[in-house]
Image (cartoon, rainbow, N blue to C red; front, side, top):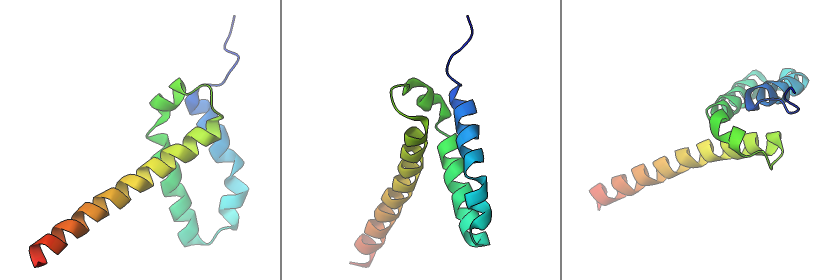
Length: 87
């Protein structure tokens, strides 16, 4: 018997394609930002395959949020280091 659910990669590509019209309607700078978010989500396709209980797009949004939060944490650490060296 074949697979009944698409793989995480297939689901990701389908979700990304479903936003193509939305992407085209955005300003160029926003298109670049959206593309970066999808790149961030793509980095987590292997873990996404294990989260079969959730909706695929929820997983991709969480992956995007995870990558953005890592940037925030990195910037906070850098800011704390700058503050400690200037104090």
